[in-house]
Length: 360
Image (cartoon, rainbow, N blue to C red; front, side, top):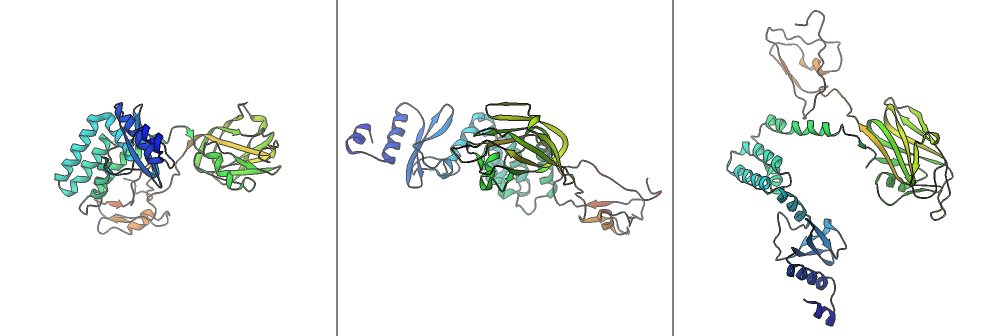
């Protein structure tokens, strides 16, 4: 396929895409054809990454064409992952060597080797595919999995301490905004519209959260009068801000300082807006952001879990029944008990309530 033949006899998606692929190859630029439902596109290597061209469906529905060498799967987006993996070729090669070594190891040892390989190169998809099988090994010790995954849980908890937009992906509900309410927290170009002169919406933060700042962007005219309510951990709404508390307003963004109370939901009562003729609405909100920190909900993870104890001891289940009416007695100088938490848990505190005079 060349430009002359396309000019003379024409060509649709396949001809155009493969002409561009050939053009890239002529200049030493990696490129290949890509199949999409009812369409032929291409991808090429540009500025250190792969990009789609002549596309109508995006990466999710793109596969490489036949006779094209591919990585772990014919899905085109695996090219992106392989590209990231090979940015640190030393670590990628090491993870591959570890993956091959795991094939020669005892079945019960494969999980640990492969888990270490994911740490070396988390973009090596082949390691994750093998890990899926290794974790199902019948002789794999539960403690091996726990010891490998607990640092990941703890690292995520540390990451969760960072301040960020805790409204992203959360559910906003409103009678007046209807189905468009979800667009407030998608951080996109679409807006939520309310055609009533007054209205409200509620945002569920899902976890008790510290709110440092609230910021929202309108698409039409400004919101002239409003109240902001925060729901406490006890489930009560408290008025925390009004339009008079706006710190500043710029480029259709309005900014409010946060408050001290941990908040699980935010409700905004819209009292007066500006009619937006283009959308026949009084309130149009493009973005609603809550900058803050979401806190884990602390709970007794031992409540009701299985307990084993030394022979001769009294009812071990009383240790985790969440009451203090019955005391457990080990009845031995070398008493012990073990609680199976059933899950990997990051513990903040361990509390023991001793019976009178029983503290060692």
